Image (tube, rainbow over all chains, first blue to last red; front, side, top):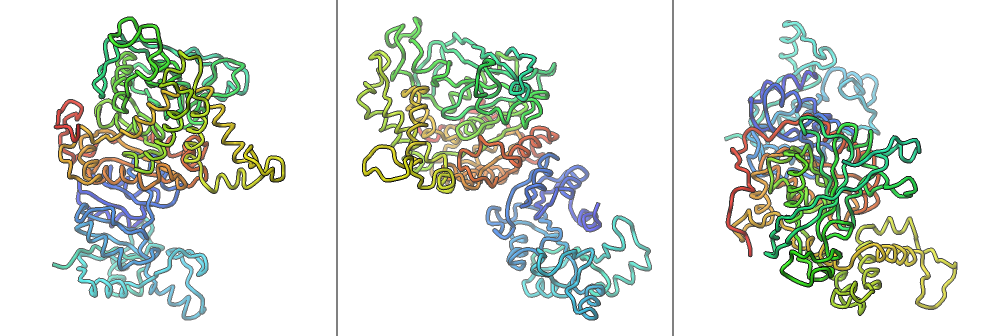
Length: 206
Length: 420
């Protein structure tokens, strides 16, 4: 299981209602459904992934996230999850607000563009960064709205979005393995430099 | 049970083989939604595959307007064309007959063997002259009536719960009605290229088709069989207009373009363009094999379809709200399939069903398959479409969502009808 999936799961209440945006082959949804008893739907656009999800017995709805969440009523989910899709949608700000309209909370993961490797790549080589978390060339990347942790947090504060929890990890270093407590504490101190993936748990500020 | 040959012919080997239709007779009177009664009736059906000991692997196929019970396989070795959904149903196919026991029946009111307008009025009838065909006196049938007779056949076959009920277009409407009327009798529901009810435009096209038939002098007030004729021109016209709605501008362009049969303008009204030739040929073929009264009745069944009738008492509700209330008591898992180029029952119509189900927290998946063939796409062998059906039918059954109300079977509750 992907590390951001593992962490996102900690913030999902058992038996709650979840909407998973860009659910891929449904592996997170499947995990939440079987181990937490959640009910909900995964939205996905990739044909192959949709069929994989359906064959797992999951509820997969073919939908382009760029079309927004207008089909869902206000507060119809406990949590809206979006793993590594924020940077690939046309209007991340609008979608983020829509997520918090249909869900009480949102759990979002995205790659950190300010990770030191990316900074080195751009700073020294003068080339757009290509890494494990961002494996595309500039011309074929689906990631059209890359941001850093700082950028994301600024967006949240500008839109009265409260950050309940956040977790920054180095996906490339860890995979499903845990890193040492020392490493973890170092990353905690300078996440915007050292972590390449972040998981945020947010809600509408009261 | 249908007889299946040990096929040596490759054509037969890649299908369920030779099948023989069966007939089930029902001699108890059937009172229909229109308040008229059929004193007795026959249902013709075919089955493919084997019913398991638990009787848990049965799949019901509901046919569309011009379909029949002959969904797969061949009736004889000389038979050139297989059943209408042979690319979907068969050994190793999306609806895998090595795994499932598949049943497809011909609906009443049709003209392929089950009791319909061409059937002679039985001696037990209190209306009409026994021995003469029902003709225009055959009662109007609704989708709900069909589903009821399908449930009666299920009882006779000893199938308490269907593994799945599957249908495209008008067949999808029957599958949807099943989920509403018999929530405990199906575990999965597959609704393909369908709609929760017809739009004004859909009804308008049906009305053109009906008027084509009704205004043909050979229609004879529907008693054409006694007159030894049939409304050939009316049926051809009806089919032509219907056929246009099944295709797309793009599909017609790539198939015919503006090609001329003889390569030059003839300055007359005979067939000149290839597309005219095609439509006339299809219409002609259809007129020879289809009964006009059946066509009228089927288009009316389409127009009347509204699964919310009888389940929603408040007429002021929006369509979505009404559908939402109706689907509240369903207990099966749904797969809804639409096709991007279908403008007869466009993807947006399928999404109405999806949205109403999601608003009720019901288990549903939805795929909108990119295919160029318009409404007809549901009859094509499209890998992604077939893959979704296969995956859904073979997927683990998760049951109804846990946080739905302790649903009473809707069919046994008696809410006030929404409209008379």
